[in-house]
Amino acid sequence: MDLWRGYLPEFIPFIGGAYVALFPIWNVADMAIVIGVVGLLLFQKEFHRRQQAAVAAASAPGQPVEQS
Image (tube, rainbow, N blue to C red):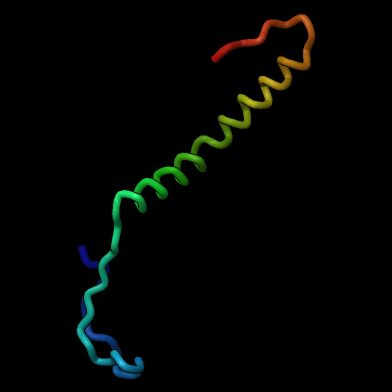
């Protein structure tokens, strides 16, 4: 899967005029990092909502604490 194939412009030093195929270099570690960051971004609001509910329940005396 190439992102771009073609000849570089002549004004680029040292490699101008050369044929280049730009392709992404991905491995399992890169995919794990990207998936982890996306997961954090998607679920951070839910995490903070649950944390605030737990703190509110713990600070209110006489009310049972929910386990999830």
